Amino acid sequence: MRLVSAAGFRSSRDRVWSRSLAEVVGTGSAFFAVGRNPRAYRERRGLSQEDLAELVGVHRTYLGSVERGERNLTLKTVERIAESLNLDPRRLLAPPKRSKSPPSSR
Image (cartoon, rainbow, N blue to C red; front, top):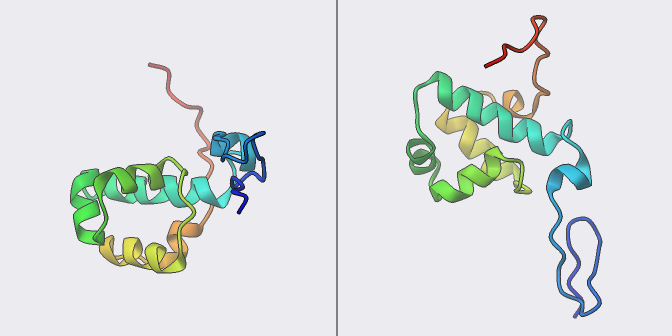
């Protein structure tokens, strides 16, 4: 059996290569919207990753990888995250709104 990465690349020994998701699908993709949106809603509600992970029923490291856009979520997981945040699941899938003001420098 040959293992293929999400990007469709194989190593010479048929082991999965690891590439950043940003390199494969771009930062404007749904993966990143589904990551950024739960994080923004989680932070607005004053929840830690650990708190939200417990509500969703996943490990905190899994939720962290979701927020970084590293996971390919099932619709069921999107629904569970949305339910835990008291949101319509479509809000998690929406592209982030563009800010009219320039980002602040730190």
